[in-house]
Amino acid sequence: MLSQYLLFHFGRPAEVLPFPDGPTSGLDYPARYTRECVADHPGPWGRALDLGCAVGGTSFELARHFDEVVGIDLSRRFITAARALRRRGVLPYRRVEAGVLTSDAVARVPAGIERSRVRFAVGDATALPRGLGTFDLVLLANLLDRLADPARCLRQLRHLVRPGGRVAISSPFTWLTEYTARSKWLGGVRRGGRAVHVHESLGRILGPHFRRVDRFDVPFTIRDHARKFQWAVADATVWVRRRS
Ligand SMILES: C[S@@+](CC[C@H](N)C(=O)[O-])C[C@H]1O[C@@H](n2cnc3c(N)ncnc32)[C@H](O)[C@@H]1O
Image (cartoon, rainbow, N blue to C red; front, side):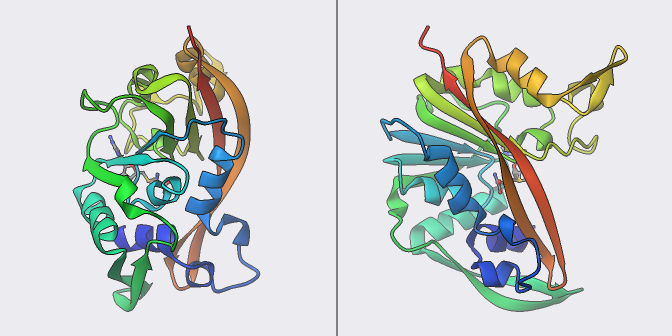
């Protein structure tokens, strides 16, 4: 998982997918998704929070735009790798070629990013520590369908986003009982004989405090090994915190 995410977040397009007829629309994910999230952001570009940041590729990209970025993830291994990248800008790792065979690779924070603007912490996105303060942008990328209680995570957001600030939520919403009991799924399920769709649940939970302002697709490509790749299309929505 660690090497898969280092390659996903920091690999050059040709390293992630050396086949030109493969799913190239999913390449360059952290930079591309960050650009889309801030494209019409009116500012101020103060603080951003990347919840479920993994090894931090998107957190570093956010630092091109925001003065301060906090990346939080439950995985200590991911956060240790993200912190090493913050300190040194590079991190050697081994990527899987086939079976147990690996090759040497190096993750590099892209040039032009002020790494000192980013800090990383181990934390649970459904029980965040007090004292994080408020943010101009909170990102939840491919996180909700990995949580035991995604609604609980969403309910905290109004305390984390300043009035006029934004939340960007993106995921292919792959609901699995291995992560989330079916009773907690926000979509992809029938309740009382009725199909429940994730947008309805997001609107019900966020609607009283946020206004949805955008929706777009975020394709991404993850390399499993030299000859196997996952291509997914996350469904992204952007929400602005109401002022009253
Ligand atoms: C599918 S990955 C997405 C990573 C990254 N946001 C991206 O889009 O590439 C889900 C991430 O959420 C993290 N995660 C899972 N449960 C979490 C929780 N309760 N609190 C914080 N992070 C969590 C995992 O460790 C993993 O890094």
